[in-house]
Amino acid sequence: MLVLGIESSCDETGVALYDTERGLLGHAVHTQVAMHEEYGGVVPELASRDHIRRLVPLLRGVLAQAGVEKTAIDAIAYTAGPGLAGALLVGASFAAALAKALGVPALPVHHLEGHLLSPLLSRAAPVFPFVALLVSGGHTQLMCVAAVGAYELLGESLDDAAGEAFDKTAKLLGLGYPGGPALAALAARGGTGGFRLPRPMLNSGDFAFSFSGLKTAVLTAVRERTLTEIEKAALAWEFQEAVTDVLAAKSFAALTYCGLKQLVVAGGVGANRRLRERLDQLAAGKGLRVFYPELELCTDNGAMIAFCGAQRLLAGAHAVGSGAFAIRPRWPLHELSGA
Ligand code: KG4
Ligand code: ZN
Image (cartoon, rainbow, N blue to C red):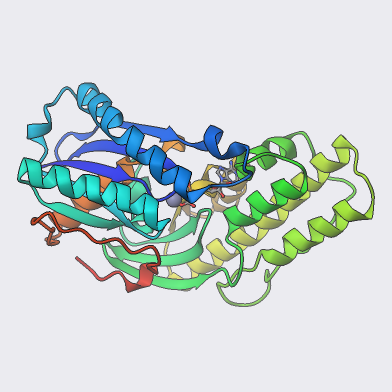
């Protein structure tokens, strides 16, 4: 079964072809980072318009990459939510129209489920059940994953998501958008010394997170006096350490709580090298393993949507075939039912 995946929930247009027998045949992402940069964040209307411009050329490119005709597509999976309404509508209507023209079903996919299952696309993939740490721009969640569609939420952020905290802190330090990679790059030039930030909710005894206080602590440090570049790097390092400490400690506590040995990390913040280093260090020698998506599949992409759609269809999910489509800009993952 050949599944076309369409992702357009925020500022990346992603298109991919996943074959249930042969694996990922092609994928392409266009990022709008350069376009939104001058505004310091995503401008929803610009995002929607750009998705419209990109989808057809991206699809042509991916078909050529895979060496298949569009008539070979058996089903189309598209991100139906959560995300920006206008941006989601572009992908959803494109998927529905193409599905109707080709006479194939269209399947709405939950963006976070796409992230969650994306490590299964790696060569070294985990097997069910596992604990998943989902760390993106909008979500920080720990989940116990028993199978496709069987997700038990253990805890989540009470305020800012980890990625959001990275982005906001980066802004405070005068870095550009998107802040996560920029802050990580600055932190790499930092190192210990000078600053000590809190580890919010480290000992709360549950799987909840809170990152907004950390951002405020950085703001206080920045306001106190003008920081040198070296001090800014040290502050970025300490911020990254604080976030990483909390994410790592709670992820391993979740493994113990669930009696599992595999941790899966997904979402944009999963690209953070320091986080990966810490998790791998903690897992070493304890019979525990940490799995990540390929680096290029950490941030938004069509491959995870195609793959997720394929898994859902294999599990017997019903797809919409009439040209109808629906989006759900707000859609908590735990409301997602099994296939
Ligand atoms: O999963 P994603 O691409 O989009 C959402 O679904 O939100 O995640 C984007 C988030 C942004 O907040 C971005 O700053 C963060 O992931 N991010 C990083 C890194 N790369 C991306 N955060 C920390 N370190 C990174 N290397
Ligand atoms: Zn995402």
